[in-house]
Image (cartoon, rainbow, N blue to C red; front, side, top):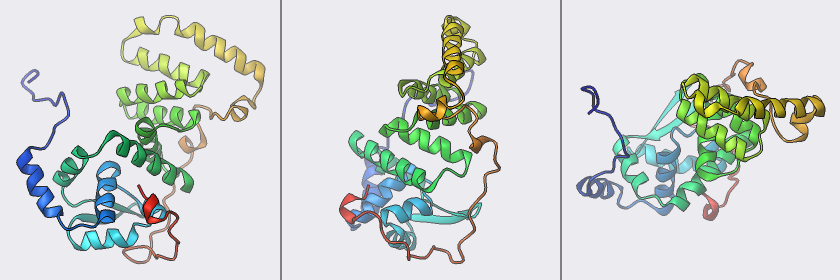
Amino acid sequence: MDDGMWRVVRPLHPSHRLVELVEARLAGLSGQERRLLELVSFGEPLGQAELETFGYLAIAERLETAGLLRVRFSHGRIEVRLSHPVYGDVLRAGLSEERVAAMARALAEAVESKGVHRTDELLRIGGWRLAGGGGSPGLMVAAAVEARWRYDFALAERLVSAAQERGAGFDADLLAAKLLGIQGRSERAEGRPRAVGQHRDRRQAAGPGHHRANGQLPLREPIHRQACRSPPRPSGRWPTRAVATRLPPGERP
């Protein structure tokens, strides 16, 4: 308790009895159905792009009918979530680190392959890249900027640190220094202005094509300047299955 308020200071884990109850509810699921529930528990809400990429549309329909998934339309797109958060607590508790990393990489690649249309997708991809690795320096910086403007400074620092490790350069160093200043940790920012200035001088000498030549994006990539347009809403509850499954069952996350 802190100043009369309860605060969560470490991850919560389901009790053995709760695990037994949930596992009894999930008994009888096929391997693919279980894998989809695990994927949703980690990445919810999942959208049409992810379901199509992994070939999970038909399975998601079955699990919705069984009362294990909840489907709704939000801003013109399908969102799939677990029907009860307790299912997620139990499923996530049983995931190995290797499984989490594999799911994170698969989800990030699926969304990136469709294009980033909304700023919240930047945060989702950035978070998945933190868990699974990969991701371009520019994308990680853009995700860190979005986290900063949502005042999630802890996440912003993790994202910008990952961007620096990937060679983001000036933009990442400048944002890292700003985050320290915003949080009143100016003592840790000592020396950062000089490093940022050196990056700036090198970038100016390299010319305007420096970002693109190095696979980087400027701090304010067009996603931050454009209105995020939602795709048209499908005519039915579930989208057509005309899109071929891109991954065979054995390679689905």
